[in-house]
Amino acid sequence: MDDEWVAGYQRLWEMRTQAPIVTENWANSEWAKGRTDYLTFLIRVEAPEIITTAQKVQKGLRAFKCADPFPAEYLHLTVKETGCFLVDEKDSEDEITREGINKLVESATESLDGMKGFKVDIRNMNHFRSNIVAEAHDGGEIRKMNRKLMGMEGVQAMKYDYPRFLPHMSLCQFKEAEEHEKLVGYLEENRETILGEFRVESVDLVKAILPVKERYPVLETIHTFRLG
Image (cartoon, rainbow, N blue to C red):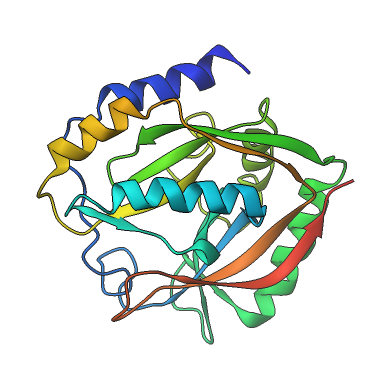
């Protein structure tokens, strides 16, 4: 694990007392502008022991009015957001048509060529302003994939991509600010929580269907990339 990565987690942890960013509405935000099918590369977290432990942690978070835990089927490690939406007809640079998906899959296949499977250790609670997360420690493999994928044509560079990119599993978002200070105290007491370890064998390109009325995106796999 490189020092830059560790320092990044520590910087975020030191900002934990700042007011949370509350998620009001995913699809009708200024960012999405009513579009719902957001494309991103991620690693699904399906290891039963990690899901069970995550749900226990979420039960503790749920005791605070500000916390809004994610369901088990949403648990994942983001690898690279494309910054683009899937649309029928392209009107903006941050959009990809269904015909363009094939090119995206081909480019990602080339970018990930040679990447091997690896183990990732999910541990340590942290505060990412809009989410409470568990850190993902893997020796730098997910950061390496993020760097490879951000070089593809048509994929947007995000402000939190490499070298700022920090692998994590989001546990909850915020629905309000009330009791946030108490929640921070809970995080401080449980900072070194260990959720478990699993081996990563694949990466998914998914369509994250942003909710218009519901609280959580639905993750629909478009293509699975197998690692060597």
